[in-house]
Image (cartoon, rainbow, N blue to C red; front, side):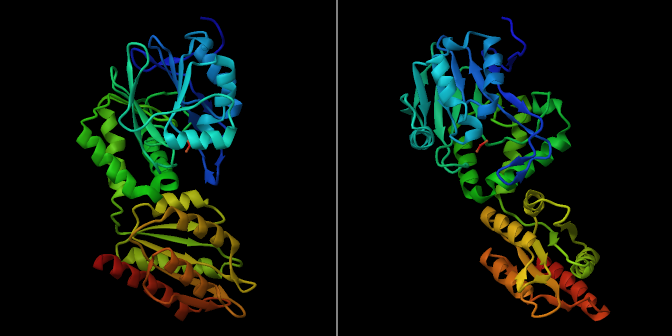
Length: 400
Ligand code: FEO
């Protein structure tokens, strides 16, 4: 069929009909430095079925790709695996244009989509373990509540063993190479880890339960088609499963993350000394000055680390705003099994270290000490205390 855009075949009956968002750099607080894709899939059974849609502004791109395979009004069934707007934003307009005979979602998906759109079409609930005939082929459903929204579910095309996993096993990575194995695997690893850290990390226990369920069910996909980034196929599908099992384990490593901001360089000097104390004790260290790193970079580095050390000057009796931002974000991601400490320079009352200790304790971080403060600028003695703070943290990592 004509048109300027094409679908891409990923199995005998399944086509990728999504959109590539090359310029995306911000996704609800997550710095998406390599853009993203919104993947939607067309199953060419006798009752053609669309799995998920795309972010609203990309609707025409998706429809053009569908039109390269069939006239879109031939779509019989639309499945919404995830109600978040990057996959459902185009849904009302697509339903109005296509007029499918049914729209399916999990029971929680029906609630979420109804609340978002007050739709003038019916959405039928499908539950875990249910399957539907889509015209000579079968789609079965697995609800994956809180991975990462209450409505999230997987759909599985039994005949071709394609697992449509919505956000799970996805990554924000705009690429023209549709399959993961065609891309630079170090980039795929980094962006997958970043995605897990920023989106999935709070739900580690759910990931472990899901991986166990999938193993027990004997579900053996040949393709894992997520809603973001490239598609996993063949032997490659073991890769994200192995990564998720490791990340969800919460097992800390001998790695420390040092996060800080600075007004006139004093807290920065302290960070360097803390880093050296850790490094000299054989600990891998990632130092993240917040003027140069985003909160989502911090989340990525913290995933799998064993320690977090946080430095802030005191400004008007408070911690630096960048620390408040980043720590609020990280707290919500619920990193596990961390030890840590605080440090910072001050000129008057110097509340920051005490406030940071409170925040770290609220996050469940096991404090190594009360921390180190520098009056205006760190003396050689204070810098030695910072180095020892690093060394003491390293010892706690060894003890773990
Ligand atoms: Fe890609 Fe949770 O949306």
